[in-house]
Every structure is written in structure tokens, then in C-alpha cells.
Length: 254
Length: 328
Image (cartoon, rainbow over all chains, first blue to last red; front, side, top):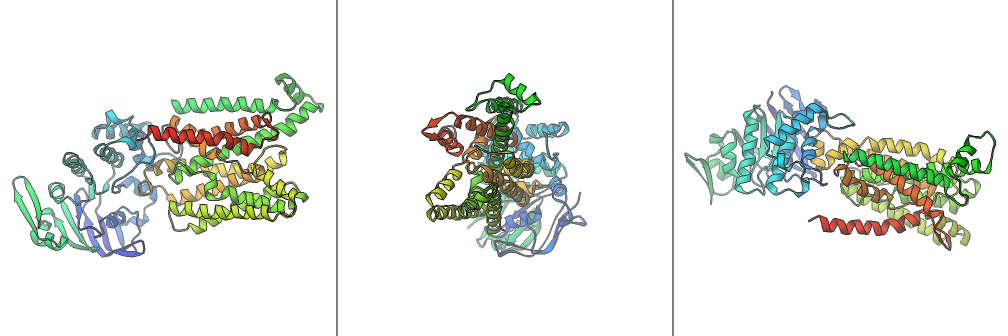
């Protein structure tokens, strides 16, 4: 178990500088929400955290070790990554889709070994997919697909789970469900990093918040410290109010 | 297990086609007669036909069909596009251009192996050019670069036809372009075989990555797949294998497109699982078509490439229509 640390990270996308000298710490076993306006660099930050985008400057550490020093497969066993709106190209079954999450542990040829098959079974059960296992993965509803993809990411029990916009396109019930599953992952002492636009959901589920604006950290810390009217107003350039009641924190804009 | 049944079924079909291919032709042999001729220490016409005419032709057909099917399955997986096929990356047209250059300048008249050798070089050059053009870009860049290089090579072939020094040269080029296994010898097998086998090995190594690529490049990369290296394996495997295949028997279309579509439903649409069945299906298709060309008479000899397209194009149309009905 170790923290994920970014030190002075600058990153480029399509030749344009998106992140500027960004330093941040994602504590082990905590759920961190990355928030910020469109184009703030949230997805780029997540790609850097996942080791998929090499920073142009600075470094990414996993505890004491540089992430770049880890091999592809060891890194893949350690962390899982779900992009925004993950898709499947072919009509493979949900069970096969979930098993793909074990790719870094599979031998080069042959089927899925027995002990890994058990993990697939557990992930299907934990994500309420047992009835859908034979269904074609490209014929799922939005909520079902979100569950299947989460199961795909969680099947190898990664230490770090990085998810880009897990609730986009989901109705309130399925959005809550997705967030609850990520929370459950963090409750099992696994780190979760998610980029999210829905601030009410973020406030409800997250331990830590990283507020990103123009590729720089505007604020970072526990939810109550970052979810203040002053910080959110500066973050989104819209007057914001933070309502706290027994049900939790709600944010109103305008 | 549907996949195992499929492989067993294809294996049986392949064996049947292979036996038929050895026995059928202008001179019919019955199995007992053929076996006796091969086992007898004395030379006979039957032995000559079997070992020096039909066997090399069969082996070459199996190799060519298998590499076309395999390469089609790999390319459809890597490019995440059900319309991808070996011709897409310019390998086939490059190999054609190479062979046509050899025929055009009369080098083919010096040695019968010149067109295949030039063809192989042409396939490798076009694939390399596509790769250099697409460097740093993604899948779409590779498809576009392949299309550009392919168009350029096709123009070269047209130019050669246009400027052909004699009607005879033009006829020879045309004949070669139509694709055939007729009159191929062990020399052709020896020339193309090693390249086809090497290409097949490279292509086979992509299986696991292809499965993960069903999730798109970002997710595949996050699962530890080196997407760039997988693309390189697919391209070089195709250049070597299909380049060599096209070099020895001309352009044979549709096999690489159709074989994966035929077999994929039986392996749960797993892109990596479709590789072996597609190779077997490709081999069955080419061998069966080659047998058919020996009997279908339409005034002149029907060429293998033309015959496969004649069957393949309507079949593909049916496939597209069915796909449209079944998918939302």
C-alpha cells in the first residue's frame, strides 16, 4: 500500500501544454475526487496518474518508486483505468469482458486458469452481473455497461483504481450505484481516483478532493476543506453556494 | 465447447479438401491408385502428377489461404474495423506492382522466380512506406497511409499496363494479376513458405493483445498491452506473409475479409480466438476454390482470384445485409 505522488508534473496533449508543474498526493486507501471545469486537465491528469501518458516534466511516484521504472504488466496488475464512456468493439459476452481485466495476469496463450476464473465469478457476483454473463457486451444499457466495466476494472483487485467520469450519462439511481461501488472499493483499503462533474455525488462519496483549474491545482484536501463557496466560485467562475444539512453537502450555482 | 468443435470441423473439411485437391483434375486418380503410385519405387505418371504437380499446388494453396485468413483476422482486431483486410495496408498491391515490374521489364522471362521475388520486395516496401507515413499516428493514420500507398501501387500497375511494350506483355500482366495456383512448383513453395510461416508466427503473437484491444486502445494500454508493438507485429506479419503469398500466386481478394467473419461467431466474437479458425477457414476456401477452377469452364480457364471474388463478393454482401438486420 503506498501513496501515489505527482511531483512538478507537466504534460502535453496533441502538442498543447495541459498540465503545468502540478504536484499532488493521492493517499493510499482513500477515494479522491478530481473536480474542475471542462478543459481543466482532469482527464490528462488521470492518464498521467495511470502511467498511460508520460509527463513532459516532473515525475510520478508510487510510494518511493518511480512509476516509470515499473514494467507494463506489473503496473497493469497494480492499477486499473477506465476512460470516459468505455466502449467494446465486438459483441463479446459480459463474462469475457470482465475476464479481460485479468489480461496482465494471463499466460501468453491458452484460456483463463482456474484460480483466475474464480476471481471473474466473484466480480460478476459483486457487480450483480450473474444474470447478464452471456449477454453481448455491446448490447447493454448504460447502467449495465457501467457495472460491467467497473467489474472489468475491479476483477484483478487493483491497489489503485482510476476512473474518468464514472457517472456521466447515468440516471440518478445508476449514478449513485456506481459511486457506491467505488466507495466500497476504497473501504477495502484500495485507492480510488475519479474525475467527476457531479459535485453532490463527489461530496457524498469522496474522502479527498483535488480541484483543478487551467492545469494547476487550485485547492486540495478533505471534502469539507475544499467544498467552500469561495473555492468553488473561483474554480468554476460562477457564484457558488454550499448547503450543508443532515443529508450531506449540496452545491448550488448562480 | 463451440470453439473446439469449430476447429475440429474445419480440420476435417481441410483434410477432405486436401485429398480431393490431390485426386481431382484433368487426370482423375482414385485413392488406392494414388497411394500405390506414391509408395512404389518406380516413377509413373500418377506419381509425377501427385508429387510434382498437385502436391506443391496443394501446399501452396493451404499456405496462401491460411495466411490470408489469419492476417485478415489480425488486422480486423488490431484496426478494430470489421472491413479491414490484408489489401488495406497496401501489401497486396505493392506485391502486385513488384511482380508486374519484373514481368514488364522482361526479367520474368529470364527466370520464373523473378516475379515472386520482386513481388515480395514490393510488398515489404509498401508496408514499410505505410508504416513510415503513419509513424506517431494511431489506427486511423495507419489505415489512411495504407490506402494512399495502396492507391499509388495500383496506379503503378495501371501505368505498366498502359505502357506495356506489347499486347503479349499486357496479357501476361493481366493474367498474373488475376491470381492463380496453376503451374506452381516446389520452387514457389520453397520461396514463399518460409516467409509465410514467419509472418504467421508474428501474427499469432498478437492474439492476447487483440482480445484486450476490443476495449479500445486506452484500456488495452492500461491492461499492459503494448499497442504500438502489436500494430508493428500485425503490419510486419502481413507484409511478410501476405507479401510472399501475393508474390507467388497473384492477388486473391476477399479471403482475408470473409474468413474472420465466418468463424468469429463460433468463438464468442473474441478477436484473439478467431485467429486459428480464420487461418483454417482461409485454407479451406482457397483449396476448395482451386479445385473448382479446374472444372468450371467459361470459355477460358477461370482464374483462382477471379473465382474467389465471384463467390466472395455476393457472400460478403449477404453478410453485410444480415449484420444490418441483426444489429440495432
